[in-house]
Image 1 (cartoon, one colour):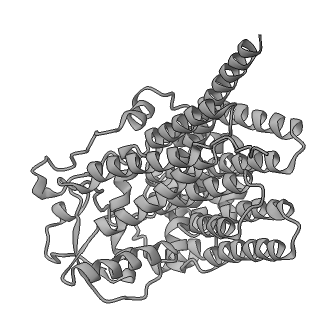
Image 2 (cartoon, helix red, strand yellow):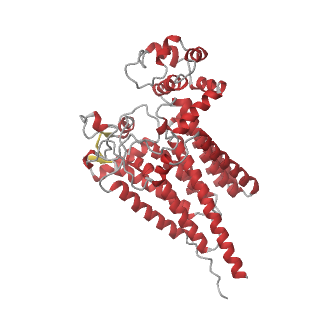
Image 3 (spheres, one colour):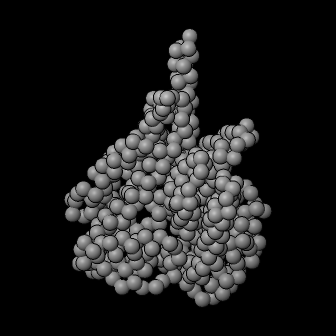
Length: 491
C-alpha cells in the first residue's frame, strides 16, 4: 500500500531565510564601522551604574558625552544598587558579563545590540513560521516570505534598531512586545501549544510591563490574555503553567508600581502638574485652587523638573511638602476627567509627536566617525521617514485608525467561534490597548515632558496595527489568487 506523504510546509525554511537576511542587514547597519547607536540624553547613568558599566572617559566634555554622539566603548564599573526599577538592567548586566569574557578591559555595547538582535530574529522566525496558510503550498510560501519582508521593513527600520546599541529602555520594551505578540500568535496556531512558548510569552510580556513604570499597567492586560490561553489544552500541567504565568505577570506589574522610588514619583508628579496641567492653562490660578496648590507656586507654571534657574527650586523641601507629597497622579487623572476638553488638547499635542519613532535630537554616530554633532543615519529608514514626513500627525487620524481597527477585530471575534481564532483577535486587541494607554499615561504621569520619546510604545502599537492590516490585505490577495487557480484547474 502506497504511503501518502503530507504536503511539504515551506514556512520553516522561509523563516530561516528571513532570519539570515535580517541578521545580515542589521549587522551591516549597526555593527560594522561606523558603529551606529544612540546618544545619551542623561538617562544612561541610572542603568549603567546598576549594571556594572561606567564611562570610558570620566572627564569627557559634556557636549561630547550627551546628545551629539553615540558611544560603543565603555569601562567596567562596580554594581551599584540604585533606585531604578526595571528588569531591563538585568539584560544590560548580562551583556556586560559576556563582554568581560571577550575583553576584560572595555565593554563593547555591540554585545547588548547582539542580544536585542537575537530576540528580534526570534520574533521574526515565529511570525513567519506560524504564518496563516492562504491556500496551497506555493501561496503559503509566498505569503510567509511577504510577511517576513513586512516585519523587517517596519521593525528593522533604523529608527527602531539604532536603539539596540544604547542603554535606553525603549528597545527592551519593543523586543518584549514583538516576542509577546509573536509567541501568542504561535500558541494560537499550534495544535498543542508547548510550555516553552508559554514561558517565552510570559517572559516577553513581563519585559514589557517591567521596562518602565509607565508600562506596568500593560502587565494586567497580558495576564488576562494569558488566562484566555487556559482552554487551549485540557491537561492539568498546562493549566498550572498558565496560572503560574498569570500570577507572575500580575505580581510583576504590582511590584513595578509599588516599588517606584519616591524621588521618581515626585519628579514625574512635578512634570504632570507644572509642565502638564498648568502649562498653557487658560486659568492658572483657577486650576491651582482646584488642585489645592498655594498660589505662590504660580511662577512654576510651564516649567519642567530639570529646568535651571526657576523662581522656586524644584527640590525645595517646602514645595515637596506642600505640593508633591500632598497630591498624587490620581488627582491629575481626576482633574482631566472633570475637564475632558483640556485632556483632548493634551492628546492633540501628543498626536503631533506620535509619529516620530526616534528622537531626532540624539546623534547616531561616534565622534571618531567624523560626522557633524548630532548626525543621524538614514540607511534603511523609509518607514520611519514616511511616518515622520508624510503621514498625518493629528488626533483625528490616529483615533480613526484605532477605531476602525477595533471595529474590525470585534467583527472578526464575533464571526469566529473557535477559541484559537478569538485568541488571535484578542492578542491584537492588547496591541491596540497598548497604544491607547501609551498615549494617555505619559500625559497624566509626566505632562508634556519629552513627549516624542515617551510615545515610543505608541509608535510600536501603531506600527503593529499597520503591519496587521497590511498582512491581512496580502493574505486576502493570496487567498483569492489561490482560490482562482483551484477553480480554473477544476474547470
